[in-house]
Length: 141
Image (cartoon, rainbow, N blue to C red):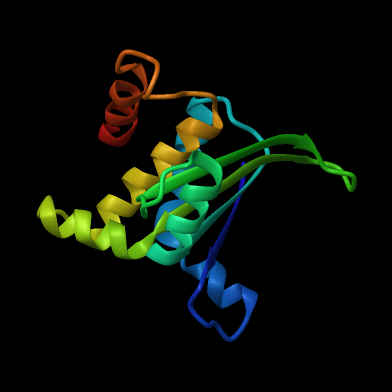
């Protein structure tokens, strides 16, 4: 699995921007392997305004949300496979971390794993709790 990280923050170059995800990369790659997910994923950290716009456009829910997943499941013309994108609202993640008295890094990892599960075809809104149980199991390892 190839994971690219992006953010609204200004960085000097793409290498600096990709360092944003370094604390999470190894854990996410391990989880992706356990889920047998392959391909390229982009994880973007953005703001509540963008989150609300995306949530309204793609889910018809007019409020910011913590994480959104956009599966592509496509072969790339230049070779390889694009699994999809994950968008995380950093302000919402910060708020949730504070409300739950956990480090922001832990909340971000939880949201990234949540997004990966959606890209893998899981849906907690329809699966009787299977996705959330798997998420907890993956994060406990």
